[in-house]
Image (tube, rainbow, N blue to C red):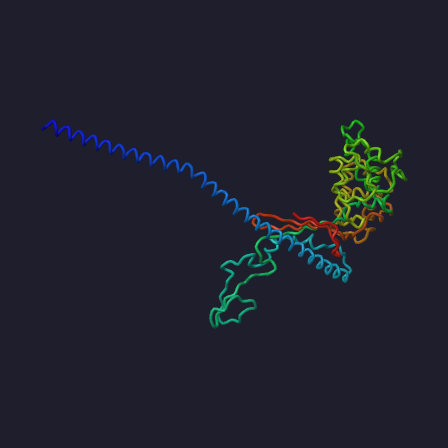
Length: 411
């Protein structure tokens, strides 16, 4: 009897162990299944989350870009207002017989981030700007009227700059450069003189040495000759009245190019087109590019021109080419420093003032400088930049004071 009971107990114990093992196996399988599902779903969920965040960021960037574009457009309109204000300032100065060389954008930075510092509240209203007054007349533009005798209003400063984001406007005169397209007109000789003067300094000798590694070797005279030939009409090389000693077919330099192209014999459409001229490589273009334009009145404004352009005018129109100043870099720097100091102090109300400033320092200029130089300008390159949440949009245009647009680009 005892043996039978032992067998029954043993059987029940084995069955219980078997059931526990099965339960343990089931729990283990469930755990493995959960881990597998987590392993499968985690990258899917992460990818979905990343895509959602990326799409949201793209949408917000697109929104901010659109807002920045609107701010850039506003900056262009602001530039129009500034032009009109500049005319009024010049008219006022003339009434008092004062020099009209003052330009507003040289005095006041056209940047809303800076201009806001002159207002009380800035772009957004702080809690300190909300002021409660009792028993006072409600000011114009008050926001609310809480109850009889008490008014809440906001001191907001100048409302013209109450908007999120910023814009800035830069004005640069194009009449501080020489106009290459004038090579097609009667002022051709004056432009040639200026080109010669710009590359005359000994500092540039290494570019025009015969043992240079430049693929398209030309000397100074040939370089200018090729630039003239690109613009003027005719098939022969330009040789009139300057240093050029050789004529011939102007197309011959381009016959070996692959692909071959023809000399344009017409105006430049862009400044970058200059690099198509034989002899103009990256280095030569980098030297000339800051000093040339295809948009200007054709005369260099000596009140705005940089020191390199003033040096070019002096070299081109000096009566005595043997002066030490043309062979001594330190002497030229000293001369330019004195002339720039006079310009900063007095300005040049007429071209004779510039000529006299040079004469005072021992350099006599030919009166024919009036062909290429003046004391005023009317063509400007305007860069309008809109900024919202770190996203920028810009508009670049070249206009004159009458509102005529010669060039427009945005990005």
